[in-house]
Amino acid sequence: MTIHNEQPAPAPRFEFFEKVRVTATDAAKCHMNGRVGTVLGRTLTDDETSWLYAVSIELEENTWSLLEDELESTGEYSSRDEFYDGTSLRVRVDEKGRGTAVPKKELGDDS
Image (cartoon, rainbow, N blue to C red; front, side, top):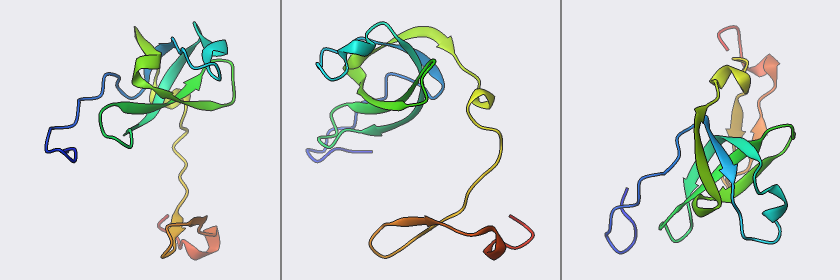
């Protein structure tokens, strides 16, 4: 991947299912400082200079979007099985990019 100024995008600092500790300075997130969570997703920031991570915080049902510099590694990893049970959902996306779940009756026997 290459960013707009033709510089290569930075490599992500954290891996999927890596356990991280929150170290935020943003007032809306600093209440989570010291809490540990697991990386479930990541994407480049809009300016493509850093990464934004989806982090499932332990003992919470929410997943937070946290910037790379708001996290530090614990050196540990969670198992994929702790978050996903193998079931899946098929989504149909319309021309505007909106997604809706495909009803099971439309999936057929092979899904």
